[in-house]
Length: 433
Ligand code: URA
Ligand code: CA
Image 1 (cartoon, protein in one colour):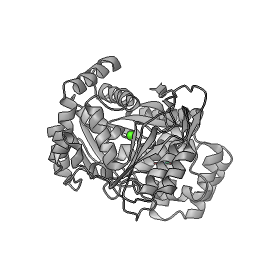
Image 2 (cartoon, protein in one colour):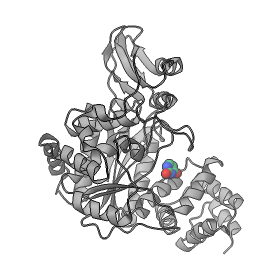
Image 3 (cartoon, protein in one colour):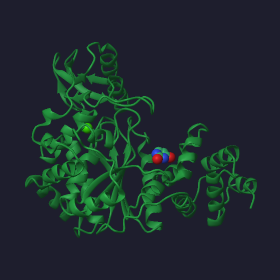
Image 4 (cartoon, rainbow, N blue to C red):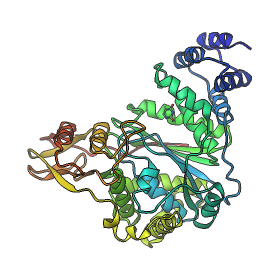
């Protein structure tokens, strides 16, 4: 086989065979196929697309390009959740303990964040003592015992995806549905998921800004999962404004605690119940989505979800007393209110720009080398649709620097008020299974 022939075949709109796709991915991973040929290939896929079978083969070829995680020693069906990314997305922190508390094993491999806030691990590390440097044996033991553990990403998962994603980033080929879908699904499958729940975001703060694109991506990922024997379901949810109120690491841990008590923001709680009931259902712990939802609602009401969070934190060295006393989490030196300049209704809170404002405070990493400040961030006091009076707080800013004119300006520019009444946006647009 010659790469040039395969590029030509795809350029002219033909479907590739399993063997051809494996040849490309193996060759690219081991260096036999150079970046310039892979770039041309990615561009051919960008224009010609791939059918469902090709996309599934591409996914599995990337899964097999490196290590895969064996979770077979964990009892039960391991369901993983993946979000395509958003601003102030606190769902993972809530969902882990929530579904674990009804017996669903959550073996979470997670990363550090780049961008507006930290990743799940950064957020959890705002709990004093908590660490993710545990051995594979301990990880498996903890999931069997507590139904929940989080470990840092191990070295060599899906090297083909790492290399290809970096190449796509500089060749204008990121935005291709088969390439995105196979990239995301390969990572979940390599990390050992038996079943997968996807939260595909749409709106200003999302990767897929348009609803139709988000739906197409969700369908492509569900199709891959079901073709390769991993039951997959997807939710399309709103990311035009940030999710919940808190954006920032310790602030989101506090928000997760509130939500596990049933006292969190309505949108975050609802999305967690919907995603969570899909996880419980796929784990076969309930025979319908309705039954699964009732189980989760009960776990919040009777305190077992909160107990699961405490147990999980303590098992990985964390000070679980933060759950009862969140003032033990890192605290910012300055707490500043952003006051509304006029009366009106909140018409828009542009999610990605608000995320950038949190990053300016130090809540996220601008580059891989930046360090993050776990204490800082934003707590929205109003959401789209809310009425606001001049002088009322729109946002509480938690900062470790006194001078924050840059942050305030960014927030004012991206929280638009209207004199007319505004409808709150739809939270969940669609479900695909
Ligand atoms: N996220 C991924 O992991 N891969 C893509 O291709 C796009 C977004
Ligand atoms: Ca949030």
